[in-house]
Amino acid sequence: MTFKYGIDRLDLDTVNGIASGAIKAELCQQAIDKINKSRQNVEKMANSDEAVYGINTGFGPLCDTQISVAETNLLQKNLLITHAVGVGEPIAKSISKLMLITKVHALSQGFSGITLDVVQRMLTFLELDLIPVVPEQGSVGASGDLAPLSHLFLPLIGEGEFWQGNKTISAATLLAEHGLQPLELQAKEGLALINGTQFILSHAITALTKMRYLLDLADVAGAMSIEGMQGSQSPFRDELHQTRAFKGNLEVASRMRRLFKDSQNMASHTDCDRVQDPYSLRCIPQVHGASRNAYYHLQELVEIEMNSVTDNPIVISSEEAISGGSFHGQPLAMVLDYASIAAAELGNIADRRCYLLLEGLHGLPRLLTTSGGLNSGMMIPQYATAALVTENKSLCFPPSADSVPTSMGQEDHVSMGSISGRKLNQILGNLDKIFAIELMYAAQALEFRRPNTCSDLIEQNFALIRSKVAKLEEDRLLKPDIDAMIELVKTQAFTVSFSH
Picture 1 (cartoon, one colour):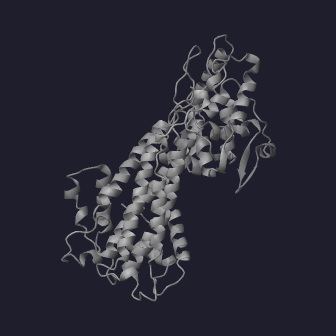
Picture 2 (cartoon, helix red, strand yellow; picture 1 turned 90 degrees about the horizontal axis):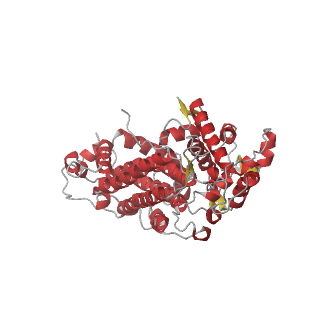
Picture 3 (cartoon, rainbow, N blue to C red; picture 1 turned 90 degrees about the vertical axis):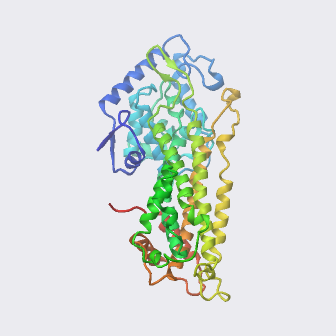
């Protein structure tokens, strides 16, 4: 399969495949023709006497200042240099790479007036793994991600930095090593490059990719905890969930039924006298399912954005460029904030299950140790999950609910979606640690249910845990165990889906 920039449609798996190298991507002749046609339209407008925003005028509050033909190129260079004011640590190289890929796709649709040379140079950067360094802070998420995109494209003009391994190196040095001369930007090109939502979008892609796995892992962890506490499987029956048929709920309930399939341990207490389990066990389809619904909403909007043109103005013909607001990040900002709440809730309910596992009920020893008193057993890791869920709650404030005017009031409502995207990824990073601890607890609980066995998938994951973390008999330093568990989650080592 070869993906055609500007022609084919990106989705989550395709963009990740291009980023990993599993999917080849190219600029086909059809896209080249669209780029060239759009460029011809811009050149005609740039050489006319009529003021067209961003083509022969200044920017933002300077939109009423017309620029001469002779000064047009310098204006584009100045645009990149003056807007590259990002601060803070660099974003991950993988996110910068996604920014490049999604920007190439947007520019190749033939509405941005970019030159073919610039798009081809961006593809050269991807081919040579020359990925620019982009600071994480400084975008308000409207007028595009101006600061991050300026840093992303400084290397086009010989400025800025590239990644070299885990270190950074000046773009000028690496360009020279590869025999690449800096480009001279022409009318509208600087604006086309730095207007857009690719910073927000690439954080959203990264979050979706991680959240998809963590949603599945949440079900596995929940099922293993239920097995450890010998909870009921009746709350997951299909007859119940068909009466309230939310998509996410149905999917989670189905997954839970499969996670309990052929479980000796579940069958061993079929006739017990317990009537109902606590909500963190019984309501897994409703809570995990609601988070899945938020995920589906985010995925839908992100895949629209991946295939959109988000710079300004949009060049329609040689006579018309429409000045609008497609750079505004609000469509993603709001749903990223929604997804942040959804992700945090997965951690909240997991922490409650951790707490239940320690209570010493349902045949389990208190603190999951038979020698409590002298030994604290598994008491303290739940302090960490409690701290992490509270940290996640504090990260759930929606940046999209705020707006600070910029650009002398010309840009008087902004999305702050860049912050929304970063915060969602922080929350998901904390989820890695919360699920690591729940899975460690659940595996310890299962030790007290032997010789009963569980479903094949749960047993497979139990064996993986035991390959890294031994059963806790007497107190020992748990930090190495927790670190090993976190690594298993982060590397997606757990089996979370079913073979067909």
